[in-house]
Image (cartoon, rainbow, N blue to C red; front, side, top):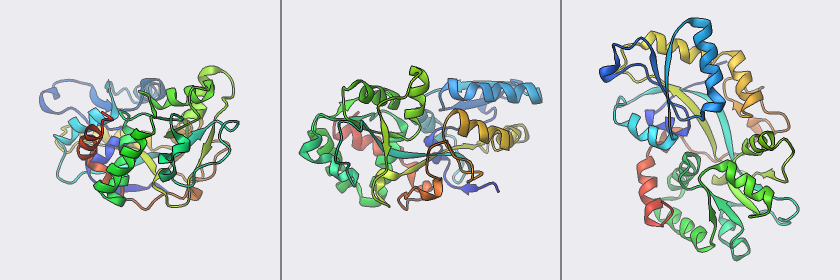
Length: 293
């Protein structure tokens, strides 16, 4: 059964956001799609949609966080969106170099992790994780944790995949990423990487489950066409593609999961409302304050 979520349009910062033509774009015959998902993982799905429906798409790829900030400027006060896939935050680590796994993200500020951790502070998934921590603990406690991480001299990366590559290469021992990057890097390298996923203690903010979502800006004049694309992304065949090709969890069909992973229902995620994760600008201000942006 499809799981529809009513929340702020800002929750689309989690990865994928869509809109039909808006502003001065109504004369275009193509549906304008703003996608924070990397082109290589979504382009073929958009192409299949056009081939099957004849509907042309004008895809505008960009950074998830930046796109979300732009969309927030034109969103309705209350927007409806649908979750497509789930991605769990985990600690990726080298099993031959990490003998004692941390129980919580709080353990990562301990001296034993100095110079061993990789993070991607400009990445939307990391920023969403920090946003969740702010909602759970407050800004003061989150700032203290961030400063503890900074004091431990982590290595900074632009993308999560680069963190996994660095762990595999022995440059760092662990990193905070989404669960599927091990699969992506293994596919790119054509071999199994020396990296494994680790979940923290049940309820720890480090186990946050992000979602990719899709929504239609209310001011769009092409609601029907846009909704047709939404329905296509929710279809069984596309959901299976997300699981098989991108290694993400389906939140539409909980029985679909990437091979080798525990079911999404067994991921002991923290109790955080997705709607509360919309305030990305507050998070970015805090990251600037502590020197991570």
